[in-house]
Amino acid sequence: MENKIKENNTKLNKEMDKIYKSLENEKNSKNDEKINFLSKISFEKKNGKTKTGSKKLDVVTKEFIPGILTEIYGSSNTGKTQIAFQIAVNTAKIGKNIIFIDTTGNFRPERIADMAIAQNLEQDSIMEKIFVIKCLSIEHQINIINIINNFLKTKKIDLIVIDEISRNFLQGDERSGIILKSLLNLHLHKLSHMAYDLDIPILVINTTRTKINKEHKIETTTLNSIINRIIHFKIHLKNINDERYAENEYGNKCIFKITKEGIKD
View 1 (tube, rainbow, N blue to C red):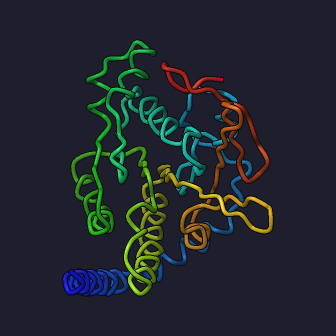
View 2 (cartoon, rainbow, N blue to C red; view 1 turned 135 degrees about the vertical axis):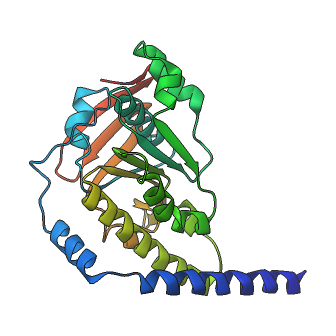
View 3 (cartoon, rainbow, N blue to C red; view 1 turned 30 degrees about the vertical axis):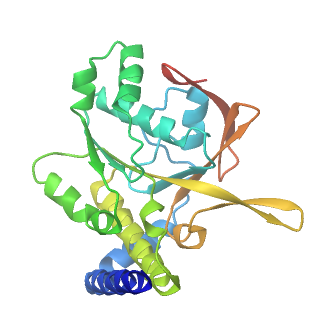
């Protein structure tokens, strides 16, 4: 049994080394300059056009600014995936295409149907615009950029959602963990380049975990140190006494509701 585990770890390490080297070879200095430029831009006065269904929440999300990575983060049952579903429906209803990358296996067509029916929309026509990619392994997630680029040869994309961004990067021993963090770093850079080049919003979802430090509870995002360096705009969700709160890094905040029909004020 121990020999089998060692054999599997060796295979994982070799595979991670191979992926890491291939991604390192693809790094582009011009793209790095773009990211450095983007990181200096203030988004306080910018807005997108992707609605959530809640006017108050739209102020907090800034309607998902095109050209950048937006992160929605929070603990379980705060509404992260529900917002992702809602903006997918609202983007599809105006005839635009969405790629929804599901790394958790939690994509629910029936929930999309509820939100579509609530707006008197044809379920099938909405689902035709939402292209779901199940992405349950790190190899598949790393290759997602190539999959999207192939998709772009025949269709225009107006929104990309990744639910969740860090799920596939939480595995392996200490050595493979270091490699996985490097892979996540490069993966996020590639997504950032894509948002910039296509001038579309890319939403990534992340889950927080609570740590207790000297009697204080500290809520941190998964792989926080990696993600914070690249994400351009962050929105924090909380569930306090069954009320959902959203707040962005500029101090805009609101309470929103999740109903059967979707997101509401």
